[in-house]
Image 1 (tube, rainbow, N blue to C red):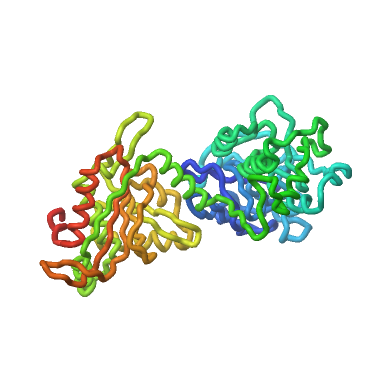
Image 2 (image 1 turned 135 degrees about the horizontal axis):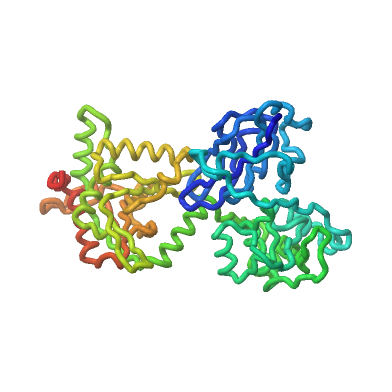
Length: 494
């Protein structure tokens, strides 16, 4: 007899608590093998294909493409064992069918898996703790309630988590635990003085998602404060907020009376989520926590460019410019280890690393990412060139793993590829420094007492002033400039 098993969104590591469904790789009715990728999800770190630990027939999928799910939420159910073919749906195999609705689950008589819990790899853990599930009411609003809003207000709510038919879904406050998994959701609500007990989540089992909190905050801002709630229960089991239809109408027409959520015609709102949201959070945290300072210097890179050309003229793999700059960075960090560190704010200690995991900024179609070259101090120019190429290709293809995007101790930012001379980089929290490199261009330069045209580059160093003073930062940058101007200086450290 076939057994229906539920596969939940696994723990993707690195403290990630949620992921967005980018693309389903299977349909309801498809036969899947053990460890076959079934869905592609995007986290704040990277794009990941999630393999299924069960082999059988897909009987249901949970969540549409673009939906955001917390770790532990159901992804799909699979019928395994003898008779699994009988679980193929009679409906159109291209749809999920009624069983795929977010509130449903396998029958009570169906046995659970005794195998994997919510992990991405190594499905050998014990079964995840059982959770009580409920079917969320699907009732429609009463005619009187529906008549209280405009047609524009009704359409504006379609497909938005946390609201139904243009209305905010707000639950009566109850005792007991609040259905929230993500600490980010709790923090967002706490920082904005929002009582989570007043919300009904749009996620599985009524889980409150970040989208629910953000929508409630936008609705409150549009009304000049939290909307007054009716005392009577709504037919679908929630309490409807008064005047929401008017709020939605004002937002649609760009009313001057609304504040936070009014969008004039032609304006576009872009959600800060995924990679863009992660970058925004990290940069904002860096500015809040790190007292940074920047120093810069122009350097004559003519000899460095000649040295690279000579290397590439010889037999062997070609050497990239960023690899030479990385080699210079690691040599400089060996002389000035203060900049290869982080600040432990809780212990009030500076932690200096005995290794250099070198991050480098890479612009991709999905946004700015910072892959990390592990143990860069132990690699030569050829090995660095190869690793930079591998990580850059993986970044552009969206294949970087969370482990390849974390753990850096120092970052190299070559913004010269954008055709600019200088910048003041923001430190990649929780690191202590970042070296920025501008474009290398011909400029007039005094060389050996005479005016000449030389290849000039601007170097800038942004550093955490808690780990060192300007003398150390200036010494580091001056050493880097000396190596750029006279690559033979590196021979001292080889």
